[in-house]
Image 1 (cartoon, rainbow, N blue to C red):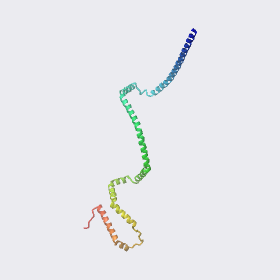
Image 2 (spheres, rainbow, N blue to C red; image 1 turned 30 degrees about the vertical axis):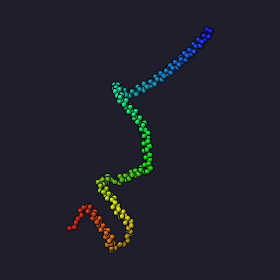
Image 3 (cartoon, helix red, strand yellow; image 1 turned 60 degrees about the horizontal axis):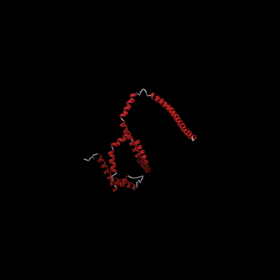
Length: 228
């Protein structure tokens, strides 16, 4: 009976020793990992220190510790301001996230509209108008443009008069009659034949109309003289 108790105690002691040895092994592995981490951090820290020394060596003449203290104080005094700036940036980020779908839809609509305008030929029309403008610019001098500006009112009034319905109707009638006229003239026309043509009622009416037209133009340019 005592032997059995002794064996049980020895087994319990062996199990405890195994646990202790296992724990010691874990502690040794952790210590080794910590030593490796310390070595790595020492190397990284040394490199960082050397880099910082190298970088600060170029600005040590311009750097003063008082400036760093002043900067720290200013940052501490403006903590509320920086907090509001960060909050505004967060609000801006939220706004951009909400506006992105709308902006994307607007961009797609704009592209479709531009494609429709291009298919209708607006861009080609504008391109050709640019060529027309280039031709006008190269064909006229600044003096011509200045004279055009000085007389633009007269030109517009003339165009306005020419586009009146009665004037357009008269021009259309004249063109129609011109197309119907037979303008073939014989090579040998005698003066007597011309006098006979001028004595016809139609020729007299035409000459009377021409004389009245010339008198009207003369009266517009100045006061006509009267015979004494």
